[in-house]
Length: 254
Image 1 (cartoon, rainbow, N blue to C red):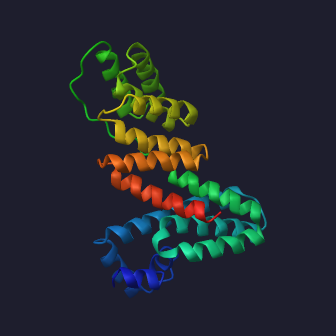
Image 2: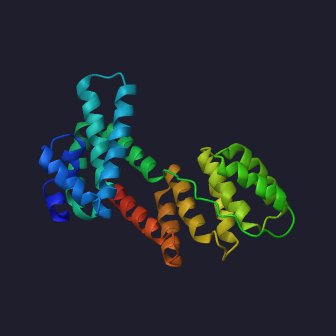
Image 3: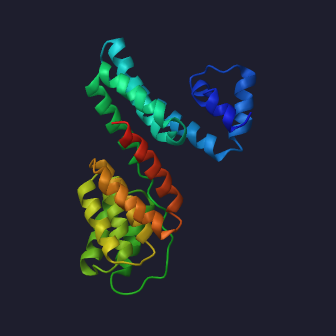
């Protein structure tokens, strides 16, 4: 089994929904363990399936309505994940779904943007610190490492107010706000990080600012930040490129 077989036969979808035979499932497993692209597509669809399951359990609606909402969201998010292969069919499917239930398709797009805006907090690598506030910064980052983002934000805010040029404090404060769903405040701090210019956090600041803007449905602003992250050609380039491509698929499906 190769990637062409997976795409043409919709193997990922069949695997997640349990429609492969035992031999077909084993062949796909042998393939995706060694294939980064197919493994990523599988993880994306499993995430979508999990979201759909939670949404349909929480919604007390007739079966047909639940199915239409789930189908619309699935079409949009799958298109975002597989934009390179399915952009044309995605547009057609969303147009059909829109005729059936336009409000639910808009909700589906919101769900797709929410998935794209999901944040995994970047790992903090301890560095040699200089200047005032270094002990407070260390303590704040200890809280950050423990996933206590509220406590970390309080400490980082104090550091950032005392030393506005501290790019690390501004950046991680923005990330903490994202983890707390304080998206406007997150965008403000991440913009301050970007405004400081060249720093170890610059590329990631563009990337996480894009996610903050996506949460506010500012897709145009998010695209600008992603292109800036890509142009810097740092370690965040690949993730920014992938996110930009998926965002393009979601936007084109409107």
